Length: 190
Image (cartoon, rainbow, N blue to C red; front, side, top):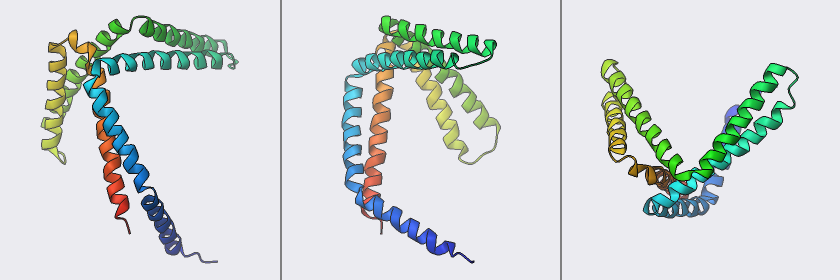
């Protein structure tokens, strides 16, 4: 029996296009909401940073609880103790983050600054020493990442109070615009 895959692909593509077109207004609503929330997150970056730190702390605690519960299902003692230890570490780490959010904000921001500096240096060096597509953009990416790390470090420890919230807001803003552009494209899909 011979199957005509081209006909199947056309049907799937047509169905996907129809769904995109039907949901364009939802994409737009999501995009506009994310742009609004991202703008607020940037404006209130200190508050957003604090909320993000609490979220990280709670996430670590939840992950630690799951890891600890999972350890009881293991039959080998070495695996049991490793997973139990990891679970306790996550729970304690999350608890410390929640108990001391301002110190956590400042320390995590310092870690981010060093990450950007080292990452920016490595990206720039790699882009300068290897021939590749979009080499100029890769060099620019490395330099901007490096400069961002230096700027965060220069303003540290004060930058610890707003940097994370600013990054969260920028991410939400860019994601929102991505959904808005998808909505525009979905409305015009045929």
